[in-house]
Length: 124
Image (cartoon, rainbow, N blue to C red; front, side, top):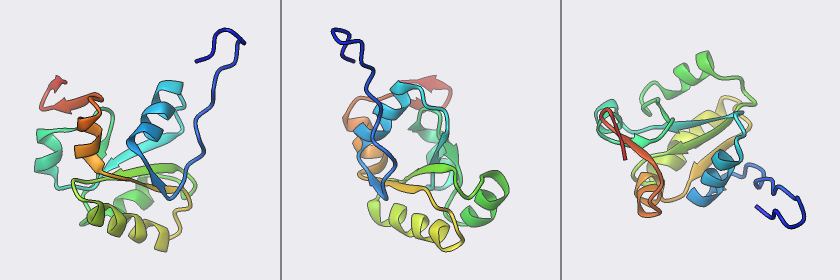
């Protein structure tokens, strides 16, 4: 934040692929109109996930997404492997979701940056 000139930077717009830094910047900015979606299985999610993420495993992803989100909702998808994230994002795009971003590096990249995760009931 540049306090000298009173300018509050705005985050970059959603792109088909995002770096973890892009998502963290948007979260820090306080923009609520986004959802972070963990596409790993529920067991992996319960063990550890990005703070504030929702669990929508790849199997059943489309059906649950269509019920829970508008087609123009900003969705950031992640997994442990980029290939899984890309496949899940493509499923959502094929049914009409317009603002889907693949979080490059997924949970490992998020953790490597030291950003907050939830592990069980603990916040790390």
